[in-house]
Image 1 (cartoon, rainbow, N blue to C red):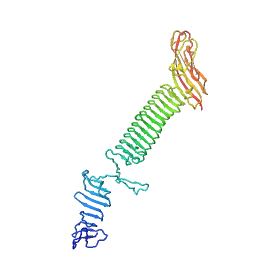
Image 2: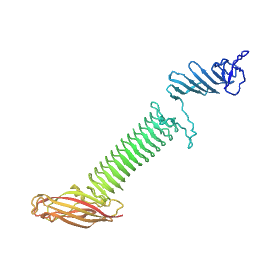
Image 3: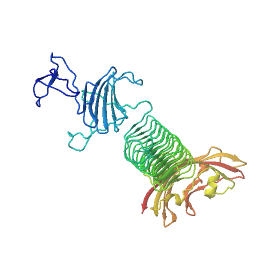
Image 4: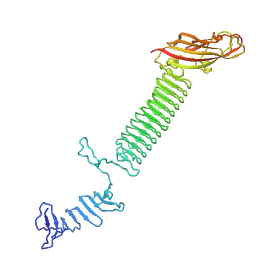
Length: 523
């Protein structure tokens, strides 16, 4: 690089005039005085005195100004009414560690800080930072922030109670209302300004038109979901609501976990879990009882600790269970209805409807297998052998349901003709004798087995066949018998009392174990 020597002119030059020993060309020049020292260069298109290290003016405005003062090293660029000021080593009173700023102004006068440099290496932007699309990304337009240090984290850290959000809150649909303190809202599409994470520490990960209005509530995604309960959660889906504390809707559509705490909807459509610690799923299932489970299509579990699983299953009794399909109803406490078309009439019993297995004890309700243990007290005041049909009312008065009703056997509307068989083991025992009875004593007994078949055809019941086998007996009980009979359309048990002489009264206890199993159904 060549050197420009400044020589002493014969006469004093006007301010702003520069004299060189040789003509200047386009090559960058180093300006020195005649002894090689640095010299001030004052350039101006006017003859107005300028007092700075370097200032370049046009006829109407200053365009470049470099200053060296006691407090600043300042670089100003001014073009028309726009001005940029770079101020290094400045120390405003509010930031004593600040070492520099960049200020801008559109009027060229009222400068405002936009970037602040601090001694610890931090750069503070007082306005928004706009990134242009990265031209190296070829698949789609992208602005990129990337750490180039190996294995380095990328941290976006709001300050204080500030939220982490993806839109600029503007109170309108585009940006939405203000977010809650320490909230996270990455949802960028909404249909209303209120569809934001508005509660403290609430979260919306994505989707559109979702709301998180409960403290610490979460919506992962989906559309039109509302998580309004304290620490409630919605995984996704459409138009779901988690409004009770600690409630969960995993997904699906139009599901609600409401009213009581810790309610859960696992999925499906139009389900409601409103009982405390309740679980619902399927379609139009309602778990309203505390600690209830309803996984059905058009069913409910309204009893405390009740369970309904299947289609159109209903458990309304405390601790009741309804499993299966098509109109299983359990309104009794601590009872079970399993299969199809079953209904419980008493507590603490099992109903196995249209099933192929016998489990425990229960009352026949449109099913294949039913077992019941019975104890009946019978009184006889005659010396003759007497046959007795026990009606529903009589058996109920004895605390026993010994009648097998047609409408229970053929409950399901799909089944019109039913053939079934019965297997019973019964024990007759003389429990007490009041008065005089000759030829019979307390403790006399008879054990026998009955095998029979019956049918329901066109709504008419009939006994097809039956066989009674005596296992063992006391001689005085030989005239006692046991048979399958009919009482209207109900299948019932016919008991024949023993023959004895005397005017006394026998108290006979009958204990039985009965199994009815379905043989065939015509559809």
